[in-house]
Image (cartoon, rainbow, N blue to C red; front, side, top):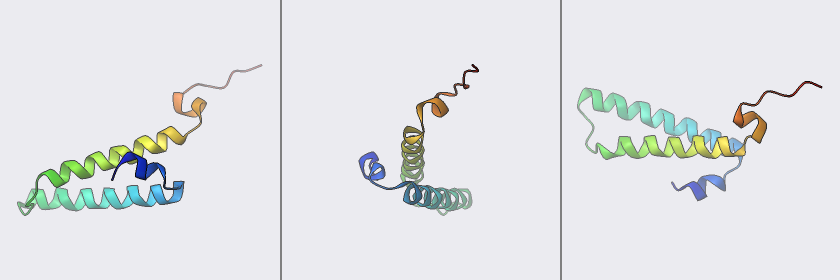
Length: 74
């Protein structure tokens, strides 16, 4: 999935997609541990999709929260 496709999703859909990708990543890791994973690249692709989802989520945060800036006292 491309980042432009992820940006078209709303926040709820993006969170659901991220949860599904994390579940898929877990299942692929288990398969790799057991030696049953046929396509090793698939694990890499899922990790990259997770990173894309997290990047889009962080882009949507307000600038003050995302930058870690503390509010200025009067």
